[in-house]
Length: 414
Ligand code: FA5
Ligand code: MG
Image 1 (cartoon, helix red, strand yellow):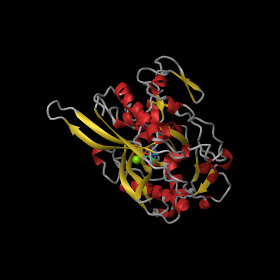
Image 2 (cartoon, helix red, strand yellow):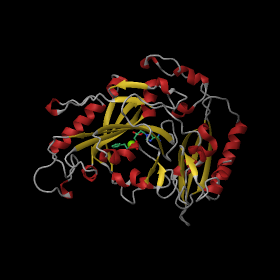
Image 3 (cartoon, helix red, strand yellow):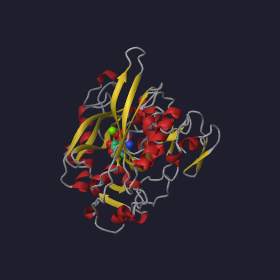
Image 4 (cartoon, helix red, strand yellow):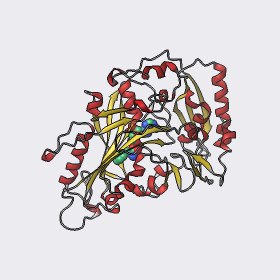
């Protein structure tokens, strides 16, 4: 089935994505399951935010405008869904930052569906939602004296910023997000930020979209959280926020002080700015105690009913219904050229859909003579909402093996 569907993406033949037509080329690798039934019209928010920017963006928007180096791995076909060489399904809402700043906005939120070829586990899904927040700060002394020089960059600040300016922006950002840092000059940036959880319609119909004031503190109250140093080409310094959830640290957002070059390019060189990108499913998972991200796509009434009533947010907690036992199958193969584990993840997802719960690399071997490497993966299958037999799992696994042979051109599959 996957093979048959794949052939539908014919180079030069237009395909439709969210009501617009695009022309794929040989570089195009969007898969049918990513294109079908993921695009739905959602309700309009009653707040001036952007939530209907088209999900197909240019390489310029998704990467170039954000200073992502031309050879950066994050651009690769194994991490993204390209329509053609110039256009892809946006991999993050940051894709819209630069153009909105250029349009003159100095504080905005962008909600959107984003698409990535990524690992498979209970916290990762190839389609998810992000909210981007950007705020420009005026009347801050950005730098003093002569033209800044690249060598003046420090872990604490960009070359174009004084330590004070960067600290000010970072504190403002942290205060906005987690509500824990206090800022200088008594400027506490509780906007308040309005967060709307944009969930699949199946979970929350537009009429019941949730509006919440404040952020992490407001959402979760007392919760164990920590800031972790991070790297993004478009911010410096950069941080990620993690929340302790179900026995592990779960990353919920990335953020930082916007690279001054982006602001300068957008004609706002007199401003300092911060930006963040939050994973909305992760927030909803913690909020509602949802153990697996696949549940957002469930059509099981036992799931949907739990979120149907107009109940106070904090009383909505997911009541697990009988969890069916997982079944795992191992597969070993010699890695083809230009292989990435995301190829396997994508391929299994195409065949097994949401029946795949996780994929782990359990063994790796490099042949001493011919130098080739083989990987052994454990694929864990589990249905969220129905029982499923050994025969069904075997059949799926057979198709996975065939697809590894055909699509990955990998040999000696065990
Ligand atoms: C970004 O996407 C950056 N654009 C965030 C950013 C914006 C940084 C502005 C600086 C300034 P990252 O890849 O870490 O960063 O993703 C952000 C969040 O999206 C993660 O913290 C996580 O909550 C969520 N996320 C990432 N991948 C997945 C996935 N496969 N499934 C579900 N949620 C995901
Ligand atoms: Mg991250």
